[in-house]
Length: 406
Image (cartoon, rainbow, N blue to C red; front, side, top):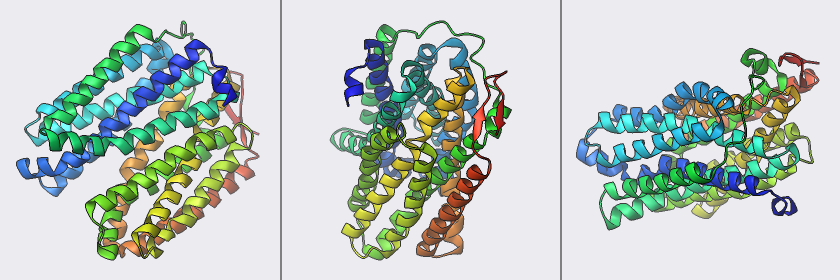
């Protein structure tokens, strides 16, 4: 905590803007959830079209992320953040006035493109502003902003919908986004002139054993998280007779635990081996997933969800400062490119998770599918850690920005 009191004014300003931007992004992502029944009733889309609606966000993010990360390294963080916020405001207004599924899908796609601009650029801004010894804590705080937006988006959207109409949540969110856009334009100072050295050889970076380990860990955690979203509500309804409100509260418990543990894990990554912390987190996730299957009451399910959320937060939080450290050792300063790759791993998990969940639950009972996922996470987690140890860990060469293993 003492480190936070020692921040400079640019550091404090940058951190607050990153918190707001990531909060808005995830708030907008989950705002749609309680309004889906309205669109289903009025537009009567097929199940396939609803699937396209939700997957279009991740597809757009995967498509656009490799573009915006390197652009922010060349043009600056402020410019790309403004572009992303404009995109978020535009997509939210599209949601408000969409009267066809085509427009809704377009809005979700634009939202994904905007997220591709804001997420990696906001994280890169933190890496620009903070020295390595402070990044773990501030990156964990950024993850808490993400989980808070996810946690509040659906309840706020549902409440505004109930007291007014389906447009009100989106219009309110668009206004909030525009206010943040103006504040960023007026008060966020550019971090300095970009240099030609801020480039990254992607092929060499992705061959680094440390980066391969981080990518694998992020994929395991994100796939597990996104796999639960479409499958777990059905399982809990069938086994425990859960109501939609109860299911919402269970996911809220998972998100809250994620947000609370992320800053703790981020701080620990400054003092302990971050790769060991990631490995411990993924093992915890594998151990706690079966608790959902064994839960015989909503209280037990709530505890299991909280433990799973805490495990995912503990796993993912050290990945962000560790990627920044790899870039530091290369001397390039290309944080935007590095965090765009993190965003791509995240997006792949968002696409693969629901797909894997659907395939598994077609082949197996949901309880067996969850146990199979737990065993897979455990097996791949151990394999990734063994491969990292066998490589004697990668190191980032400062010559020509290439990645080598020792």
